Each structure stands twice: as C-alpha cells, then as structure tokens.
Image 1: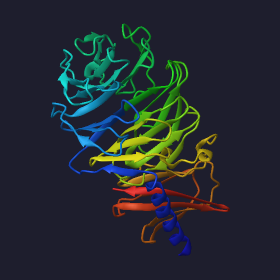
Image 2 (image 1 turned 45 degrees about the horizontal axis):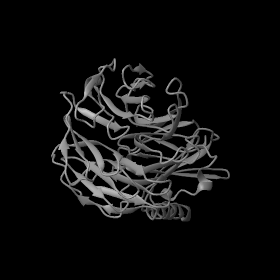
Image 3 (image 1 turned 90 degrees about the vertical axis):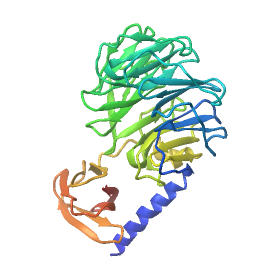
Image 4 (image 1 turned 135 degrees about the vertical axis):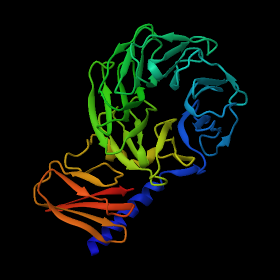
Length: 401
C-alpha cells in the first residue's frame, strides 16, 4: 500500500512541477485555437475557429482579441516581417495586415479549393496549399496568385520554404513534395502512405522534420538530404500536431493532450515532458521566439507560455535517446483496449494499473514484450501504469476516456 501511495504522490508531484513550467495566459471554453506565430520576440498572433484572432505585443504575457474582418475558421498564419501578417481562412480566403493588425484586407487567390496551409518567404513571395493538390504562389504580396502543378490530387496541408527556391509541401496519405525552382516543378518524396503530415520545419535547405497524424502515432521523420532519405523516431503513443525550431539545434514538438518534446542537438535525440495545465485537451500549435520562450495554443481557448525552455534540464536531453525499455501504451488516451509494450525488459516482470485513489485495478505477470489489456470497464480518468521487476520500476500515465 505504501508503494501505491508513493506512486500516486510521485505522479501528482511530477504533474505539479511540470505545470510550474507553463502559465496560462488565456482560457475561454468557447474558443478554439489552431495555430500561433510570432513576427518578433514581442508581437505574435494566435488564430482559431470562427474568425478568432488574438494578438500579443508583450511576448505572450497578455492577449487581445482583434477583428481581422472574417468569421471563417482561421487555419494558418504567416508573419514574414514586423507588422505584416497573413491569415488563411476557410474556405479559400486570405487576409493581410501591414499595420500590426489594426486593418486587414482580403488578398484572395482565385481558387475554389479549401486552403489548409500557408507560408511566406518574405513580404512579397508566399505559397498557399489545399485540397485537390492545390499549390498557389504570389510574388507581389497577395495582389495576384498563380496555380502550380503539384502532380497530386490529395489534400495538401503544410508548406515550408527554407530558401527562396527550395520548398516542401506535405499532406494526407503521407504525401511529401519538394521543389528547387520556386514551385515551377514539384518532385514526390513521400514518406509513408497513411495519415496526415501536418507540420514541416527545415533548419536548412536540406535538413528538415515532419510530423502528423499517422498509423505510427507520434513519429517524427527527419531528413538530411531534402527528403531523398528519411529516418523515423517514435516519440509518443499520441499524435503530433506542430513543430518549431527557434534555432538549428533547439526544436520543440507538441502533441495531443499536452505532450511536449524537445531536442537540443538538431533532432538527434528528443526528450518528453507534459505541460501539466490543460494537458488533457488537444494542443494544436507551438512557437518559440528563442530557445527558452514559447507559446502553446490549444482547445478551450487555452494559451500557455514558458520562459524556461518548457522545464527541460539540458542534462536530461543532450545525448539521450528514448530508452529501449521504456513503457509504451497505445492508444493513449484509450477507450476499450490498450496494448502495453515493454521492449528490452526481461520476462516475469509485474504489470499493474492503479487509479488515483490507490485502488489497484490490475496486476499480472508479463511474459511477452506486448500485452493487450481490456480497459472498457475502467471509469474515465487518469491511471498509473507500473512495471516492476528486480532493481527496476517504470511508471507511465494512462488517460481513459
């Protein structure tokens, strides 16, 4: 019983300490945020459903609701320069400001396709992507747009240009495209054939990362040669939704239910943490203005801010890969069944699941690397999954919907 109480205290203390690394700057259950971008260390925009646009001028300490002249769902935002921003809204509208959000004008592409993503290399040259393989380009700040030939009919979701002529686009069914001539031609460099690749970041013309909602769950794919070859790292049993690299070595990824991941060696290794506040709601966007100061936006109108690098100790990240013996739970959050994998652990260890009152709901000896457990009878809530054996104790959090 003492061990169970210790386990519960440990989980709550971890959650509390992690919560101290983030502060809630906005909370309104009637709102829903999709993305966040900053044009400088102080000025940024958070966007969401039904024309929701909020602006900060003090680095995210306070946020003010502004009128961007739309009631449509805001899906992407680009901030190529101070006081200049573009917001992509459904179904196929783009609005622009050049005075820091005081006034907005429509710079609409001539398309009937739903637009999902957008990026601007500078104040003049930008790209928008959407349904039916749509890729649109402007070279005059949105005054006019030209359609490009993508070679695909799938829905495209994200676009990123690390250089003037070199760019990348991702979409559904694992579609990934590359151009080296400013979009005149696109080459298929697709990674997988399932799911949605939702966010791209390149730290150079050739080195980049992409994440999304995939059958492989929380996997981050990286390339060092412009997408010719890819390597995969599985970080979590939840989906990943957004990426941000404030510099070439420091990067962050955000997943559903408050999972935050950080690298300090250019994506070589990643360390996980949990926001702690609002961590059981979907987190959709992340942006860091420097290696330590960042913003996360989420469902229920939640904006969270950190100034200490999300609370990661450098010694806990550098040079450390995910351990082969880590306790992994899929899916998580769960409904009826979960699969608990214990790679690299000896046979004969004990697996137990404990609720927050200390009641043990399951205890069994694990003899295989993967164990399927029925959780349909568990009430909704948070549980501790514990793996014990000679000289080892591993604990993971399970969310039951």
